[in-house]
Image (cartoon, rainbow, N blue to C red; front, side):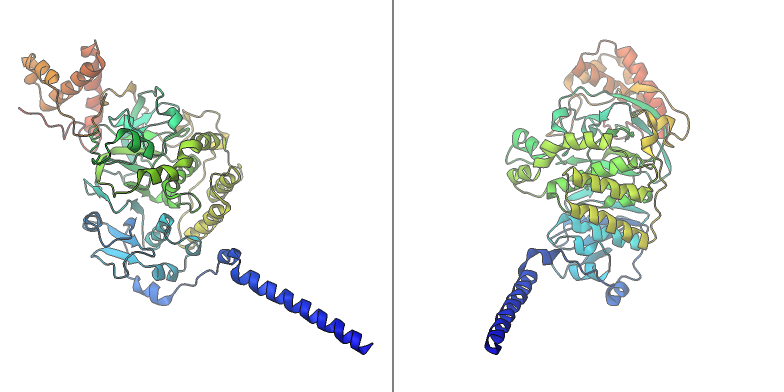
Length: 510
């Protein structure tokens, strides 16, 4: 009996040992251990290292290279500081005057709860840079890449609470490239099924609440998808696109979507929450999905997205367009469904604005636009924002509204003074050039030579005449006098009220 009991005891010991070995093996080698996050505690050495660094205006970039010429240029813009977010391949000895470099060790030492959820070798690591800027006094954040260069030292973005501009009067979608003179181009993330649609050119001119998110158009090699580059760009040539720098700013109203990226984009304080970049999409999708997500949430606070005349130049870093096409697959096949989903989505009426952020992020998980980790990241991002003292925007529930397009006038604090005239913007370039800057055609020059009275007009009036003649030449407009009258009326209002005259930079030989 004792021998049998000893035998059973040995068998039980062996079984227990097997369970222990399986347990150790499972938690040592299972990939699930990588998702167990230990929240970092702030490292006093790191906190003290950056203790004296403060500014209310920050530029955030990420790089894997030593300081590029464009980053050096950014660092010299008066009144701004630059935070550069490093990654695994960024040189550890990276430094440049007026730039704060955050190594991976620095990023973890800052103690943000968001940081452990950001993958290495990921564009989403810029998120640490946003939090750093907010922690060090940011009221405005400008984000861009290390191959973009502002042309105006960021002076043509608007920081005042109100501004003059054109409010788009179309429905559903807005193509900013069309507004700024390139109607055959479209930005990365624009629904491909809508590229060829006949979009309205009607706007409303008035004095508006300044857009909370402002994207400047980029000349040179702007952000377009791989389909455009593979089909319409010469393989070994550099794109040199020139947009119309006389076109006034365009404001996108609630109910209308437009893709915007993380290049040459300014966020005012009430939109700093919108900087969060998702981690579970591809590199070519993450900032576009972020942009659509942010636009829908802007409708819950009476905010808007605005596009501004070209104020930056990009000479794109070389990379494979075929690889880009693979990364952009979701943009090609899911963007229309995403826009439709966001248009119909409503946040519960009893929710705060931050609650709506989490609710929408979770809904996008359920619709398979991104994964659960991004919903969790949104929650932790909000937690970090609150810890830094960021003020939550006051919510204005969009779900209470029956109208979609005109809510900006009737229910939202968008219009500050009077609503203005509803008009067709008459100075849009009909066919922009993608290879060189547009100049007066011989037909336009000869038309002016045949009108000696026009040559005696003021420079601004003559410039307007040139624009009307361009429209007449390209579109075979028969009523030049009516068009000129409309453009004069438009110019009289806009030329006095915008930060710069519409025709300021148009070169005309005397």
